[in-house]
Length: 392
Image (cartoon, rainbow, N blue to C red):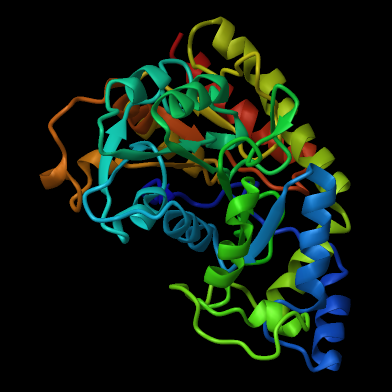
């Protein structure tokens, strides 16, 4: 969920900088035409397999399944974890609603954990205090592609015999101590939404890291049937084998994604350059203690998913967003904490999640896209500097 700053009245900026521009490689039309000419439009066709092969070979994932969204990937993970009504699942409150919703749909009781003090990922100490005999799953959300403390999280999971699901919606091509995010827990869920690094409009992917779940995952992915095995000639008919849903995307979506994968390295280089440009140019404001920039733990890497900064308080953030809007800069903020949402607040146990509330009150996401010009980045940076320096 992205919440846009309230619109301001102004005569018109000299330069408008959008929050996001979906990147089109130029090869999408070619691949879409190939799908149309092939007559194979539904899912699990040649382009789906090309995408699967790319991710499994590039990152060493055991098995991947393209899905229509990261939400669907998370819902598949909840089914594979065999969540039953009354089971408890530990989730960071500072995340998109799908992270929790996927498990609530299976009847789970959600226990919201706080973030770390210096970056908005789930705090292992907060997790530790929430584990009970009913706990089944820990959700590790890698916010902005910055890795959670996976060593600590996996240690807790082994200690208490829990599943770990990595919500890696932001985290393609990001690593924890050299290991790809999404490959460390039992399952990983990725997003290819148009605001992400690699896009297909909507789209996602489930990574199954534990081989004993691979066969069931394919059945769940294919509406609870063994149709995939039938299409490979492994069975002479297919039927209903398990619960499931229509989680797989069409070949049209897969073809869009494959065009992006052909330029994977170029896309990542561009996005990382934008991230480092912002970080370098805004660093003086952090050194003056006027803002905070993303804090990168020793075990984490930058993948160019987004760039955020942290203001002193909500009042300052509101004023900065208004100032940037007048300059034609479309910055945004998110998330509203799930534990205090209209839907969940009556179910919450009343704990105050101090750092979650702080990040929710103070984070700003800056405009970020592949083809961002240096003049656009500098306009954003210069405007932020003007806002703060005029207060000195």
